[in-house]
Image 1 (cartoon, rainbow, N blue to C red):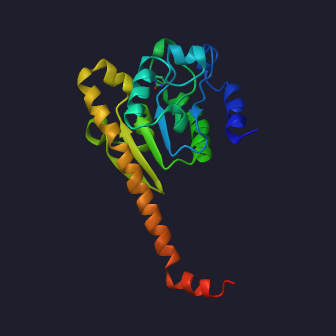
Image 2 (tube, rainbow, N blue to C red):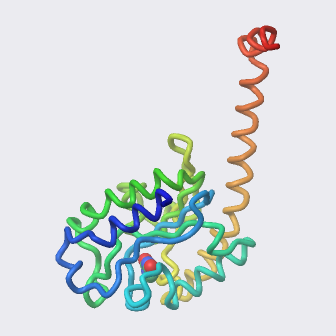
Image 3 (cartoon, helix red, strand yellow):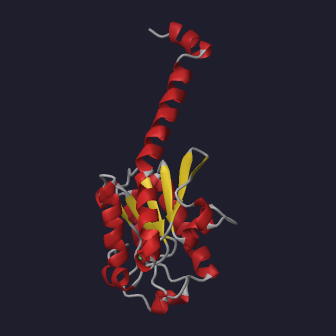
Length: 207
Ligand code: URA
């Protein structure tokens, strides 16, 4: 059993929050275990709750379009949410729910080990960019401990506020550039390591 499947089994049994009682299906997340990019949304909505899959409603269709605009599809990335159960009537997630679910999200990040984490919306952004404002930082990237964090508007917000649609589209188009810059830096670091005097000396002893 893969680490992700094992994790999904644990998430499906979780009953830490009251909202576990009203859920139809838990929505753990989905995508490639070796994905370079991980998207983190807010919480399952009606459609996600019915199907047990993230971003399958109208916001998900738009996310698919955004992914296609940079030649990616769902199978190549990983998609999760801050909380894994649908809040009744799609209310905002409660602080305690976010806290209870953090363990699952942390483990997902540990397993996927993405190069880039894209936060979608306020709640996801608040986890990785505390005290920041989405209107100021959307589309920008910040590298911490080898991971590039990029904050984006939530696709649903962009659908409801027409003026944000072009903004999120433009922000998405910046992702390939971030990834290639990330890869170049990683390669340069690798080359530097290989050509360091210590490494050269060590290489002399290799047979
Ligand atoms: N909105 C989210 O934040 N997540 C989903 O999975 C669907 C809609």
